[in-house]
Image (cartoon, rainbow over the protein chains, first blue to last red):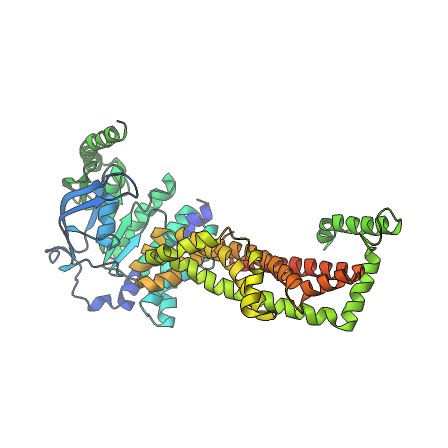
Length: 304
Length: 247
């Protein structure tokens, strides 16, 4: 990342606080009964009950990708789904998103079974999934158009979120002209702009270089702390999971099951030297031990 | 400008060689009238209005056939990629029709629609539809699943996604298919006019050739070549403009 871009991002972080507050008001979120704080976070917003998923490849035998997975996610909780590749964590996310049909078991959002994709669940994909024929601005505007937000308001909102992710000046760029980090910023701005209740993130920083990833992680955490949403974050990176999430769901190798749910909310995530702090390192070690056996298991499956 | 001059220099050399071969008698002027004579004939055709009238008739046929092929072929290809039943129903026809040399249909379209514009438009439409359909189909099939999901999760309906995501995803390939169709339309135009027509550039090529007016015949052939070249250049410019997001 160039120094200029970095200072722009730092700058955007400073502006973020004011912005997110303003945006929440403009979105009418202050009318909602969701109050800041921890007490009313009882009950679950996403209720996954005994979900199994059979994956039918175009040729060959069908594979059990998820086996009897149950999980409750509370409102405004940041939860990470962690596991080796192929453990079905992305599949679970797609089921919650309504992209794949839930045949075995049920997934309820606010008590209602998932019937398909919808703007209540915003998605950020690993490979950004930006419309390559649209500029940064038009990408961010897309969801707002679908929601029939009045023109003036949607333009203001789009600009505010472009500013929020530090892409001011790149509004008219096409995705092909952006770096990986900038593309993912655009994708995040696009998803946040429609103000979904739930944010589904599928290894969103997996395709980025280490420096950009670190920067994006802290930005995401900052955005979430300022304007908490329910986040379900898929990753195979233990550190990332412990750093971002309040609870880490460790999944087993194929077929995917919930192996353990580890609470990671006990330390201060915004501490600057968190990666070297003892509680953090211990938590990472604890979870690594859980994951390690699964990674070995996953590799055994691959090499017959 | 200078780049263009350098680029087309080989053509200038060919023109000079043509003139020289014909003038010095190395090649008989019956087989190859000198280029200067061809150009003179071209101006004559222009002045009598023959070139205008026949050129307009030809361009109308090509444009109409091609436009139909683009609209219907594009819609068909995308529908085949999007709805499985449509694909199952239509792909056998596409597969059977694909290898048929479309010029073999010239007598058929003449039988159905006579010697006028209709038979040429139908032939060009049928011939050009296949490359457009296949390109649209392949382009639409290559649509990134995540883009469709992305649009759906932002509130777009399934049908809306077709227009918002699948069509633009198919566009690069579709536009290349249309370029193939554009070239094909000239082939089918001239060959059908040569065989069954009472007007058009292909018709006067045949007419002038049969009458032994070779310099004028070459003039019309060069006109067709030039029109094809210009059409392709313009098309490429438009295509680059439409796909400017690709870089």
